[in-house]
Amino acid sequence: MRLNNLPAGVRVFGNPKWRGRCVAESVDQISFFSKLRAEYPATFGMLAIHPRNEQLLRGGQFRAVARHKAEGMTPGASDIVIPGRVSFVCELKRRDYTKSKWQDGQIEYLTAAADAGAFACVALGAAAAWEAFDVWRDETK
Image (cartoon, rainbow, N blue to C red):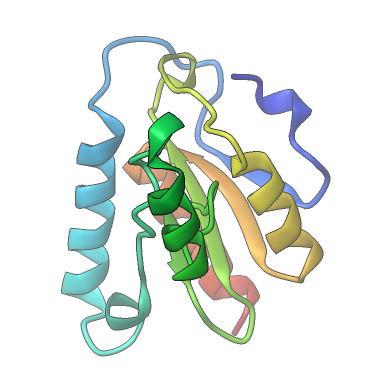
């Protein structure tokens, strides 16, 4: 995964040079959403979603793929989406991003979000996602 290939308008939060042991992306996801829902239960915590697109359907599952897309599944949708006047769209990767992989459509989704005026970013770990969230809140007041 290369962060220097991200399109203009997609910011990176966290330290791309950091290497070492780090928790799984799902643990960072849980940490971010838990804090968000605890601190903003009636606003951002209520609005934030995590699109479940990870279970990729292949091969003989053509009908299932077509049905999921028809129902609104968007391959590559970012991990954290908070709708608003300026939406927050964040792709969460592990703190040591070299232990993460880009899935099909993720960069294109971030690009489309940025082009549509969203605050689009990649966060390296839960702390970086929270930093991005704080910047978004400050910039969109």
